Length: 348
Ligand SMILES: N[C@@H](CCC(=O)N[C@@H](CS)C(=O)NCC(=O)O)C(=O)O
Image (cartoon, rainbow, N blue to C red):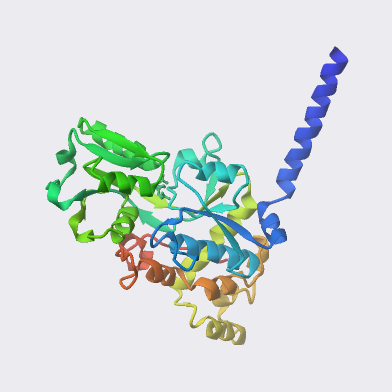
């Protein structure tokens, strides 16, 4: 019996030993390169962020972030498989390896980041959001207090669910949450009158309203109930992939800070190559310094990223700018130097 037990212990040591070294040596980043394709989890239901157009192509800020990852890792922003996921499915999809990365209106929180929680790794924030409430104009509801004893439609498996509860409890206001699996169900519940308000990230409320028959009949209350910094995420056990994602997002922000765009990138590369004194530009564009190699990417990965999607400001304008289908003022999503929160650490 003792022999059998020690045999089992030896075998399990062997197995865990092997699986640990496998974890350490093989990054998902290498797997993506080997596969030649990035598997990106998205929502697919939010205009302006990730939405399947009539031509069968995904569009939006979250989709452009997937494209910038594919361009930075594989040198080709078209090598992507999109996987639409509900809020409740998204974290399991990362942990089981069904997707490489999640680019889906997901709030960066301690519980999701920690190894004792969902065990994710969050890339830098790509959209600073906050939770809001949308009501029908005809309801005459103008603030949270007016929602006392009313029903509110909310998506389950979200930060939204917890925040709405926190806010109403802290004000000692009774209310009834009506929970649904995804945004389309929340919208349907709200439009069919099952609840007096729907709550979600304010960006999602704006996106949802843009698709309504009569958008002007709905108002988003001015109350901001929470902080919702939305970030792409990957498996927290994989530092190599996390480093690559982090610096691809910072590439988009640095490019905007430095005025480098999809339209002038070739000119900037020429400038950097011909001027040895332009030290920081040369490092950023991979002419000197070998920075890409340090994070498992090509030294000129920044050029591929900017050529594919343009800088952060270009991505924002294309999907959420004044002339887009879902115009959302940039506010917190401006660069820090323009009064917002986006700022990149140095490419040194
Ligand atoms: N940012 C919040 C909420 C994001 C969220 O996923 N919201 C719900 C709707 S309330 C949703 O599923 N939206 C998109 C979809 O249905 O695909 C979070 O990370 O929990």
